[in-house]
Image (cartoon, rainbow, N blue to C red):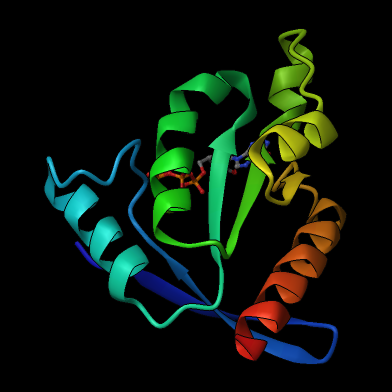
Length: 132
Ligand SMILES: Nc1nc2c(ncn2[C@@H]2O[C@H](COP(=O)(O)OP(=O)(O)OP(=O)(O)O)[C@@H](O)[C@H]2O)c(=O)[nH]1
Ligand SMILES: [Mg+2]
């Protein structure tokens, strides 16, 4: 099992995206968690994007808090907003962001235009990280 990488262009800038194994924890209880933890702790990233499932938010918050202990350069992407809506689940993105104190963006990954705000947010976190 390995991290998958790809280049994404936004605002005339190139981003190297590293997709690490999906996990609910990074306490090293499995190979996936160990790979994810190693990359979050030691990888030379400028921003960690945590993609959480809008239909099962609380299941993902444990991971969010674990990553926030490691780095300040975090963006939460609440994905599957279409599925959530279908199930009658509404998530107050701004409230979540103010409670956590980090940027939160809502997305429907299959709808490309919902990803612009995510990239804009990633860009601003990366820009801040470059200056530190
Ligand atoms: N309807 C809908 N489908 C989505 C959305 N985001 C992803 N999917 C679909 O969900 C499926 C799984 O997507 P993946 O990107 O493989 O999910 P993942 O969380 O990376 O999975 P693991 O890496 O295996 O943990 C695919 O069929 C996607 O097209 C979304 O916002 N809405
Ligand atoms: Mg995946």
